Amino acid sequence: MSGLILFPEMPQLEMVLKLVMATLFGGVVGYERELSDKPAGLRTHILVCLGSTLFTLTSLYGFGQGSDPA
Image 1 (spheres, rainbow, N blue to C red):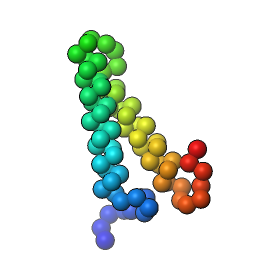
Image 2 (cartoon, rainbow, N blue to C red; image 1 turned 90 degrees about the horizontal axis):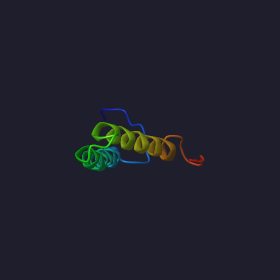
Image 3 (cartoon, rainbow, N blue to C red; image 1 turned 180 degrees about the vertical axis):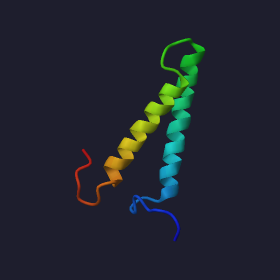
């Protein structure tokens, strides 16, 4: 078994898939805003989506069973 298991309740492949999807969706929104010459473009939306996804995954699976995710 190689690698560190951070969240044993959730398969790592599923977690990576959620992070990739957040990056793609944030990129689509950011790219659309860059085409319209609006502030907060591609990089900003990618970082915001990744940050919110990481925060949500950590609050849901990072503190074990029986904890309050709020």
